[in-house]
Image (cartoon, rainbow, N blue to C red):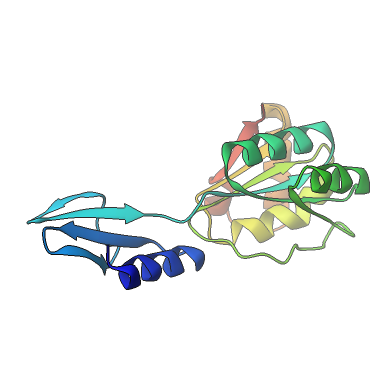
Length: 177
């Protein structure tokens, strides 16, 4: 294989950008990741996407269980909680977790089209500031814990807070294990 082509693809993935390699009788070369994996003429294109990233924000057993499951699955897992015990427990298991100091604290992170946000709070006060923030970030999925009744109340709260209806449609609920 062409080492520079492979290195270039790895560098793109490290930057959380898609990459592709073209495999042919002439060798391996880097190319734009503009098509899915498959044949294109005499080249077999292998497309790569960045690793799944799951950002779990919440508290308690649902948060820690979801984070452990995501981590075991192999997803890049970032966790934020107002509870020090959750953060300590997850960090002890090798899962990146940090404290949310107050309800309107927005975690410093990057998101992209390969990022999922999962909110696991029982207290919607934390969601009022954090969900609108996440709705404005790049992602492929956003969901929140709770029953259908809780979700209806959450949607009403967010609408009252000025979140546009089209943004609210992308928020999935109920979620959970």
